[in-house]
Every structure is written in C-alpha cells, then in structure tokens.
Image (cartoon, rainbow, N blue to C red; front, side):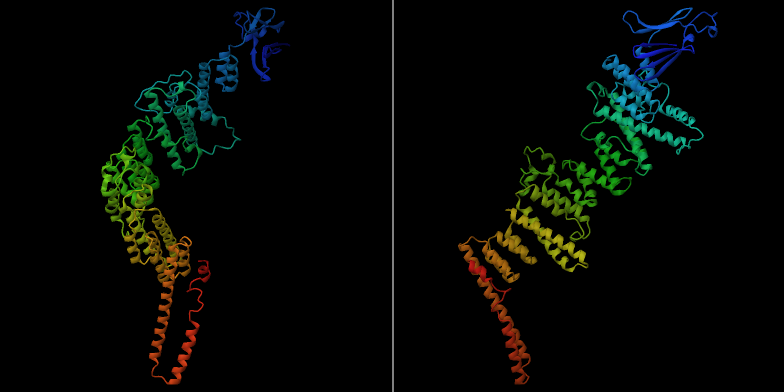
Length: 638
C-alpha cells in the first residue's frame, strides 16, 4: 500500500498489516515485520480488532543519525530504526552468512582488532557446523589463541596442563565430539525417505569428520607456528608453544594410524606438514617428551619415535630404535629408512663417540655402499693432515671439519677387523662389496692424501681385481655372467688407468712387478710408459701381445725427427726381426721333427714329403705379411 526508499532498502507496508524490507544490494526481501505485534500498547487493546488504518509512512533523519521510518495510523505514530551494524554482523555470523557480515563490517572502516575479532567469531561459527576448512581459514587471520581450539579436541591436548577456554564465541562445556554428534544427528534427521541411505554408518561418518577436522587444525597450527600472517600473531610463551607442538605431533600420529589402517590411501589420512620439519635436530621443538613418547610407542610408529629421540638429542635411544627396525626386525618399519637415518646420524659424529663404532657395523653389512657414507662424507675430509707415519692421529690445525675427521688407518683397521672379518668369502669379487676399495678411493681421490702407501694399496687392489675378473669373464657359466664380469673388468681397468695418469705417489716399479706376476699386459704397458721404459713397452706390444700396429703408433707418439722417435723405431725393428727369426726357426724345427719320424720310409715317399714341405714353406714365407710385419707406409712417413 505504501513504499518508500530508505538508504539501501525499499520499505513497503502490506495489506497483511506487516512491513517488508527489500535490500537494493541483494535484490531480495531480507526482513518482514508484523507491525502491531512490535508495539507495546495497553493490555485493553485488542490488536486483532484494530482496523487497517495506516495513513502513511516516510523516511527522515534525527540529528544526522541513520535514517528512520515514521508511520502513523488513527491511534499513534510509530518509528522504525535500523538495527545497529554490530548486531547485524552478529546475526550474519550466527546464520553463517559470513561474506555478508564481512561486507557490513568493511563499510564501517574497521580497525585491525575488529577485523580479527570478526574472523575469530566466524571461525567458531563455522567450526560448530563442521565446516573445517573455512573455519581454519578464518582462524589463520584472526587473533584467536590456538589453545582455545586445541582444548576442544580432548585427544590432542596436553593432559598435564590445565587451561580454560577464553574466547567468548568458543563453545563452552562441550568437546568437538559433542558438536559432531549434534550436527551429524541433525543432518541425518533431515534426510527424506526418498533419499538414498548414507553409505557410512554413524560411527564411521563421525570418525571421518574427526580426522578431517584434525587435518585442517594441523594445517592452521603449522602455519601459525612457522609462518604467522604478522609478527604479533606468532606463538608466544612456553605454554602456548608446548601445547601447539604436542598437538601437532599427536595429530600426525592419529593421521598416520588412519593411513595405515586404510592401506596408505585417502587425502584426509595424510599430514599437512613434514614430520621431519617438526622433529628436526637443528631446531628445537617443544613436544612434551614423556607424553609423546608414550603415544608413539602405543601406536607402534617406531621410525617417528626414532626421529623424536633424535630431535631431543637422545642419540642412544634413537640409534637403538633404528637398529631394531633395520636389522633385528624387533620393531616394524621401513628398513631402508632406518638405514638412511642411521647414516645421517653417524656421519656427523666425531671418532671419540662410541656410538659411531657400535652402530656403523650393521649398516655397513646391511647396505654397504650407503653405509660407507659414514666414513666418506665431506666432514671426514681433512686435506691439511698428512697421513705419513700416522701423523693424522695428531692433527691440530684449525680446519672446521677437524672434529669429525677420522685417521685413515683407523677406518681401514675397523673395516678389516669388524666388518670384512664377518663377510664369508670376501675375496669373491662377484659376490661382495669391496669396502677397502671404496674407502681407499675416498682417501686418494677425495682427500688427495700425499701418503704413498694408500696410492700403492689402491693400485694393487685394482690389479688383483682385474686379474680375477679376467678369469671370471672367460669362465662364466652363462653369457649374462660373462658380460657382467666383462663390464666390471672394463670399469676396474678404467679406474686403474685414471689413477696411473693422475697419481704421482705410486711406486710404479713395485707395481710393475705385480702386474707382470698377474700377466696383465695392458697394465704393464701403462706402468712402463710412466717409467719411460720405451723398449719394455715395445717388447710387450710385439712379443707378448703381437700388436704391431699399436707398436708403430707408440713410436709415432714421440716428437718428429727426435732421437727418442728414432730409438723407438730401431728397437721396434730389432724386436720384429727377432720375432720373425724365432718364428721361422720354430717352423723349421717342427718340419725336421716330422722328417725324423718318417726316416724309415722309402726314398720316393720321403722325396714327395720334402716337396710338399717346400711348397708349404713357400706359402708361409714372410715375404709380404700384412698382419705380422711393419706397415711400410708408416715407415715411409718417418
């Protein structure tokens, strides 16, 4: 009957004796008021008998304040005023119209504290309707005390600390389990008979909701702990830090329990933070030791327990737990993770720590290559220490890594007596990891020791391995085995060659005698090259290996028109003719032996055999040999 425009609303009087308010922003009716039930008239007045006698309504202001609506009838003048904005915001939050409430708040140019208070109220309102993600997003930018949320979850709070929830909007005298029960019961009661029944039972649905809430709560707590939106929202006080860290670890345990029971699947069963970041040995955590230890043991999360011990600097307990996981099998867990964590701990320990020598053995036997990192890491290097005559035992330089440095002889002795001694048939190169080789390579190549004994030992070890692999590559039972041995043989030869080329500490003469003993001609050649025994190099190429082209190429390596080059070629010619003469003599001796055997035969038969022998001799006469003579074209270049 009457319609007026008042601020951002259209207000109309309906014939049903009510006032309707339409928002121009939302383009819909937002309120309806029964006009005559709002007034407090005398008890004698019968409202239902009053005639519809509204004569008019209009908008006006009082003293510069908000717009009012005046309306009158035959009996009185009525005034309608806008609800205060803070009440409207509260009403929006209560009915989960959070975005609408925020718009109203921002119209009033709020202070930082007012905005944070709004987000706290919104967070608790959404929490009570189990909208976990949205609620925690509001808590992240609010000034809520994390303990006001943590202590709604009885399973993750610290039992040894009494705390009363402070926030006015937080639920009182109830837990999150009570809230979930009420909300889920209400939702199920709203399901119509035509709707398909829930796939989960009530207890299963409640458990799922609880884990989802824990996940998003952990996400909020972790961000508040590591990356607060502003410095004044960072965790303050030992009690708050203790409650937050303990809650985070307990949440992680609960989520991992669910992940394990589900076979490792499900988004809600994963953790929103990396447990190693919470239980880091480099940054102190405030988890309550006794309570968290008990919970980890009860849930049988032994690897996490080892990380927890390490973060609390309980190395003995940590290493024993890892040993029980990775070696003895007493505790359940991933053995590979236990090995990796043990190596990480031991490689940082100084040689004076008994844990290093106690726990290194099982790792070296379980995962040799990975375990050797305990003794071959960067912190074990000390290039300023000379190992000759065990001088490395008295290192006194200012190297920052000096505390972690271990004398080379000490490690080698430990490997021989404590590790290799327990490996059956250790010299079988096809079956076992070579601990000596791995450590000597570290000493020679990484530490660049100037002690000749380590260079000699490594080179001799290569020679031994090459000799054994040469035999195995020829006697392997299958083609695959022979190929594997051949590949290992080439790798060992390449390593020895690189060592001979780079090292100046090797006793080449001593190593040469070993190479000759093993009949390793390639290695003999390289050693003679290092000793500049050119005649010996040529002798091995021509006599032992019969590689004439390789001998010529070796002669050509000398500078042109040099005496060295001429001497090499002269020696090559001498060896060649000596070789040819010996070859012919061997053939003649063989022919004479055949003739002696047939001396009792008739002359005709003997003459026939001699003719055939001469013909064969002509065929094999070295007049134009291509594979057993000197390449004349190369000689012409000389």
